[in-house]
Length: 120
Image (cartoon, rainbow, N blue to C red):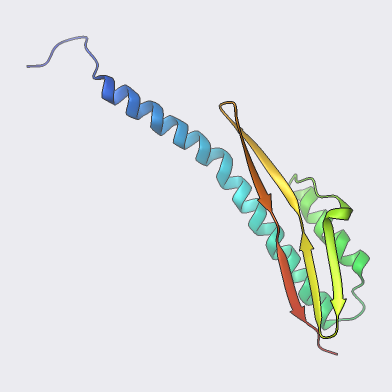
């Protein structure tokens, strides 16, 4: 028998949990997408510098900083490290993204890097 005007408390709790999970996904998924885009930029910049010696460190930094600016990320020039050794170019960037989820600060630490073999 159904009682008019009564709501099952379990349904309210499940709805609230789904709302929190949905909000977290809404905030975290774009952060993951931006991190993947920066990772791809780091990879392409390293590959470009490895295949063409005209691509200097300044060009690599500028490419990564431009991509960060387009993705509304704060990456400082000092957070980008480039090492040219023997037959390899190592490019990495260190940065953080923060999301506020109902008062909880979710911090995602990103360290994309790529080692590209040099072709002279």
